[in-house]
Structure formats: C-alpha cells, structure tokens
Length: 464
Image (tube, rainbow, N blue to C red; front, side, top):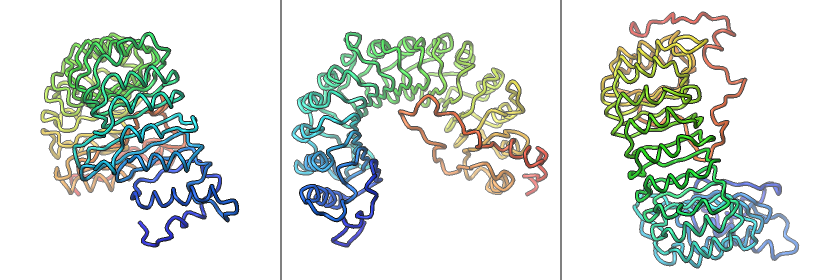
C-alpha cells in the first residue's frame, strides 16, 4: 500500500508488452484509481506513457475487498482486450448494496465478446457470506453475453439455482472447465440433460455442493473426456457415483474428500479402467483397511502416483502394510491425523521395494502429521539409505525436536514441515503432466551417486 496520492503513476514504468497481471491483494480505492487513470489515458491522444492497466492487458487476477458492480464496470471499460478475468474477495463484514455484486454488475461483463475465462469467487475465510444480491436472472444475462466462455468458476452464489447453472452449460458450447463452490442450491438437475449438449468438459470442480447425489454424477460421467474431477465435501455422494466414474477413459485426478463412500467404491475403482494418477479420500470415514487391496487389484496399481488417506479412523498400520506389499510406485502419500497410524507403517514404507528400485525408493512426499501412534522410533527410519527420493516430510514438531533437527542437518534435500502445514500445492485445473519432473531436477539418491558419495548415514541421529 502506498500513501502517495500519485500511486497510479508508480506503474508508469511497466512494460507496454504486459499482457498478464496477478496481484495477491489490492485495496479497492487503489484499484479504482488505476482504472480511472487507464480510462483517462484512452481518451487522451498525447499521453506520455500508459499505466499498467492499458488496453493490451489480456489476463487479470486480483484479490480485492469486495467485488462490486462498479469494479466490474470499470474493468470492462478500461480493459477492452481482456480474455481472462479472475476476481476473488474475502469480506470481513457483510457487504452493503453499494459494495456488492448484483445482477446489474453481471450484465457489464464481456462487452467486447473476447472473454474466455471468468472466475468470481467469494471466500469464506473471515465471514460466512455469499453474493446474496445475485440470482438466476443475473447468471442468465451473463451467460447470454458470454457464450464463448471456455472456463467458468463461481464461488459463493447461494441464491443461484439449477436454472442459472444450466444456463451456463447450455449457452457456452465451448465450455471445458467448470468450477462451482458453495453451491447450496446446486442439484442433480443441472446435469439432467447434459447428454443433449455438445459439451466436452475436461475439468470439473463441485465443492460443498451437498445436494448433489449419485444420480447427478452418473449424468456428468457422460462426458468421456473428464480428466480432473473435484467432488470434495459433497457429502451426499456414495458408491454408485464412483461406479459411474470408474470407466472414464481419461480420468486422472479425482477428489472424493468427505463423501459417503465405502470400501465398495474402491473396489469399483480397482476393477475400473480409468488411468488414475491422483486420488484423494481424505475424511471418508467409512473406509477401512480392506479398501487398500481392493483399490490395487487392477490397473490403477500401474498408474496411481498420489494418494491421500488422511483423517480416516479405519486406516491402521495393517492397511499401510498392505499398500507396501502391493509395490505400487506411489510418489506422494498423505496420512495425516490418523489416530491408528504408527511406527509399523513407517517401517513398512521404508522397506517397500518397487520394481527396479531400492527401499522406499518411489516416495517423494510423506505426510504423517498428527498420526496418533507415531513415536521417535519412526524418525530413525528416515536416515539414509531409506526413502532416498524423499523431498517433503510432514511430522508433529513436538515428536522429538532434537531428532527432527538432526534429521534436517543430515538430509539437506529434505523439506520438513512440523506445524501442520500442507505439503505441496494443488491447482484444480493442472494438466495431465502435473507430476512430471524436469530432467535436471535430481533427487537425493541421484545427487549422492553423481558426487561419488556412499548411500549411507555416517551420522547417527539418535546419538545427536
């Protein structure tokens, strides 16, 4: 934040070739000042230098105080070449009529017809609120003016019903990516006649849509090009939803966190044909150890690289031993906040042999934060040569501070997380090559080999 009244001119040195801009957070007053200067510069024939918000800008990502009608109108006027608009707000107080988005504001979007991606998200970080002044009419009017959209993200539109969401699906024939969060009135009817459209959805995220059931997912599965599907916190989904997804020929990333699935759902996936690379089952409380051999009974064993088994009380050391025996080349494994995961699970993973590798060779990320049965004994199993490719390790910081610090010193390539932070990041619409690693990004084992160092631990952690 700048106190100088000429803040907008600070950006005068920005490159004229700038086409994409992302600002983590900018106060509304400062943003509107920039837009005002941009609009004035368009009317002026002899301005010396355009500000950063000049007409060539195509992609804009901002976090603001409030998304308002005035903001939408100003952006639409000042940025005639915009193709990607990504706005998010996180109100700390309930917005008033003048500081909120309404149906009128949505009508001002895309006046030049160039918009391909629109994202309007209201975060619940500080206050449980939504765009209460937008209903189906506003979405219908927006869909009519934005028929060329390829990607739509809407979060916090609590008054929008199936009518509004269906308008987007039926109006935007080129839609590939759809994201809806906190869709409190989003039901199966949205996908009732989706087979009658020409849609080829590849990325779909439907978080916190609790009225969505197995029937809706069965209809959605008519899109055979689905590659990424995020159904986190859709608590009405069960085994039949997974059954309909298990044969999708291109499905690689699937999130089922907090759903009502049982071990039977994992059997469907195990016997299915989808080439899953990433599967998240966090908080699926009905699952037991029996789901592990069911999941790895078929072709998924060859493709799965990322697995999240966090917050599942029924998963114990026995289940992780079954996973280790499957010899599946898992790259990322999360098991945080499982009360029955302990040292035996760590030993099993450390001893796991993958074809052509060494002990525990495939794991690059392992999250054991707040696992109830982990003791300092488990830390010893992270010494060399075990887990040679491990880059990220999550443990409880108070487990044994001395041993954890010694492990950090002995393995400089290992990033330790001890405060409960999530390891790594995930973007809902990452492409299928998300898990590929650059050839020059050597893992720890390869670095030791190149340097001619023996793969052994000359430092005894417990002695330190």
